[in-house]
Image (cartoon, rainbow, N blue to C red; front, side, top):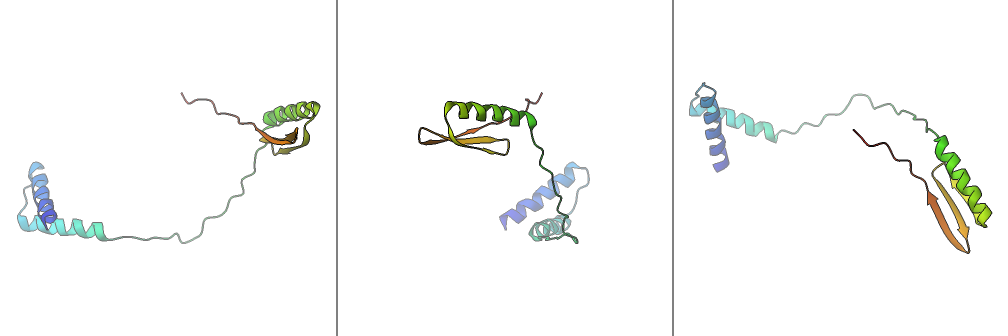
Length: 111
């Protein structure tokens, strides 16, 4: 209840600062409307479901070339079971230990 009284006084002060003083009854009515507006929750749903867009994945040729060079180097060093996952990483086994080399292309910094 103290919060409601504080809200009424705040509304009256704001109205007076705007140069339009209001009565306590008007302030109480405005406070009731403001409290009621906060309690109302609106749940709305779109009429039509969003259409699913099929986004075609772009292949980065530069990364693919770099990983192909790494793959050739690893095979030359004696790596076993070399496999490439898209153009992002190369997995291989060397001396009985499994390894993965992942290549990340960084975006230029924002100015």
